[in-house]
Image 1 (cartoon, one colour):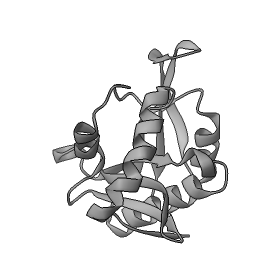
Image 2: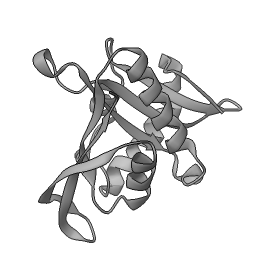
Image 3: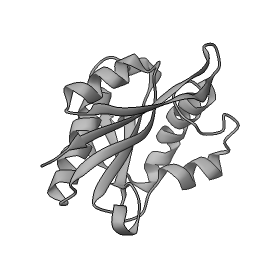
Image 4: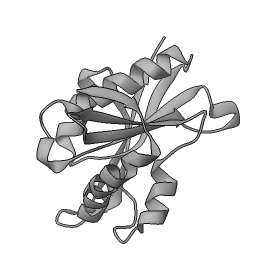
Length: 162
């Protein structure tokens, strides 16, 4: 598997992954009725941020976007988001993408990486993040309306690079 910069011709394979994840409405705070045009604008970032894809044999297995979490005085902390094709979840694609963006953020001189809204029922994702150095620094109770679990918490997670 290769992780590389997103190219415009990747969108044809990235969009179905994004659409499926967003429509499931169980891990992202995006509107489940998100249009392709809006999704592209949200997912494909411009510098200083970046979007990458995990590819194997020409097939996009997953994607990540990363960059500054906030502007101005908050721009020294990075953030990232990940989406993996449902056919390959649990096979290390998300872990590889997360490790890749962490390495990139360190190389860029960020002080750490913050995830703003990790749904507490996303146990597999949380395990990956914790294994790679993140910790839960707070939880907003009831901040996420899960389609089957009702209102559950959103974790804020942080990985300090110092």
